[in-house]
Amino acid sequence: MGEKFLMKGNEALAEAAIRNGCKHFFGYPITPQTEVAAYMAKRMPKIGGTYLQAESEIAAINMVLGCASTGARAMTSSSSPGISLKGEGISYIIGSDLPCLIINVMRGGPGLGGIQPSQADYWQATKAPGHGDGQVLVFAPSSVQEIVNLIGQAFDLAETYRMPAMILADGMLGQMMEPVEFPEVVPTPHEKPWALTGTKGQRKPNIVNSLYLQPQELERTIIERQKRYDIIREKEVQVELQYMDDAEFAVVAYGATARVVKSAVSKARAKGIKVGLIRPITLWPFPEKEIAAAAKQVKAMLTVEMSMGQMVEDVRLAANGACPVGFFGRTGGIVPSPAEVLAEIEKMAGGAK
Amino acid sequence: MEPNRKIYLITGHYGSGKTNLAVNLALRERAAGKTVTLVDLDIVNPYFRSADFAPMLADAGIRMVSPMYANSNLDIPALSGAVDAVFDNGGDCVIMDVGGDDAGAIALGRYAPAIARHNYEFWYVVNCCRYLTQTPEEALSVLREIQVVARLQPTGVVNCSNLGEETTTAIVEQSVPFAQKVADLAGIPVKCTAYDKKLAPLKVPDPFPVEIFVKKPWDSAEEE
Image (cartoon, rainbow over all chains, first blue to last red; front, top):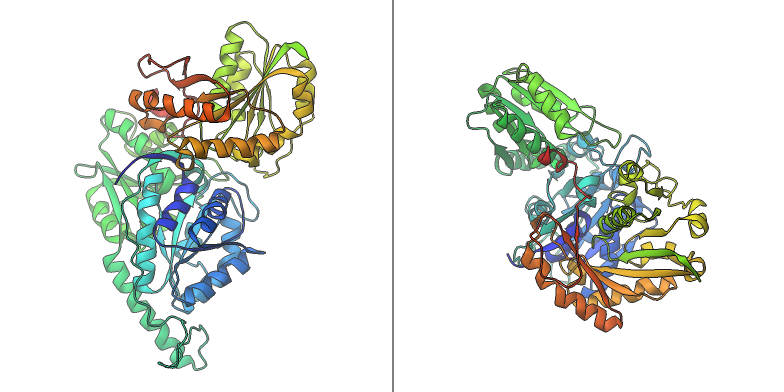
């Protein structure tokens, strides 16, 4: 750790990726993540990397597929509608067992939606980033500093498990300015014996592909991939618990919403309500065990999201009926206010004390 | 030259503190009894902009001119015809909050002939804590890019150096030589050093203590 700088979330996303050894960016501008591409356009030529503005999001994700096939650290970045366009490519990358980094700075949807912040792509990121049986690692930072800290992990784990990693941010995180410091990192890209680097006449050709001619072979491949997913569910969950030791109530929130909730939880504590915060840092794998344990401890839970309620379904599955799980959300580009969340906490706790 | 109307152009790198400075300057001029128009000329930033403060500024008696779709869900950087009118009837003082870098300052170039007819200040806001403008030379190169597209000559540097919520008196005081160096390289004076008025009064040349208006959604409740 060294000097502190003031950075915009989108700039920090880009700079952290560069510091973690990413030299190849393929993208297409879209608000509110455009500064990622703009930063890459400025910096990549200066470090001997590639910044390529593709003709579309679909082209960009397929360039990532090609680049990742060679074993290089590659990334793309977009916002909600652009991620939908990338869906096919993401599925092909999953099916080809390739590591890469995908950034989604979420805005309002569906359709063209709007350019204000949102968290309405939770289902897309965690359930179906593309068609088929497959997952991507999903990280949900809630500060500019955490963006910086998670980018390196995202690249590392993507390579460990040979799958895409996604940073699921929102417009608020992308656009806001916060102090950050960059940890000293020596990027250590993994050995990639599967990469397409040229046989030099010394080995059999590697094949990167997502087409399997025999259904038995495809099924076997998918089951092997699912075994990797089971290891990830076991080992790679990250979650922050705050004020949970003596909590009688809990609020579950991620990303920028968790910042709003933290503020509301502090106020509720000051009013004598024993409420805690559960903040998933990884959304896939989801902190099922932590939430299941908390559900047995507390009287009720509340999930707060910038959507009509998506993560709340995973919270309910994990709670498995051990406590009631309520929901409060704003959507369409509206960020919930700490006062609104505090009112919901008071309602859950049975009125203001 | 129309000496009775003063025009302030607030330019600088993204996140240097332009909007917060522009809002404070508008309130200061208004408090001094002047009629003030604040123009949000930012065509690049979707959030955190002068237009956010329109109701508060209206209460203070400050006229606000914003891009037509500012803070809407439309990503269309259309400037209103009302911007042209401020040069003729913007009151005693017109403050233009310009978007970041040369990308944002392009919007200024279109008004350069009208601005040049007036008594104007072209301020370049610097923040030595910003990642890509930590050296005076880097800050100067951003100014050069801005002035090319603005088609006007800068008249002064404003030091807004800050590290957001972690700003200390030491950070502000240590930024003074940085701002002076940028100004020396550009051949213009340092106009003032703006800093959060919650910090103790600072021993800096031409201090401008400002209120921090640009906040995150979760900061609002901290102060209730």
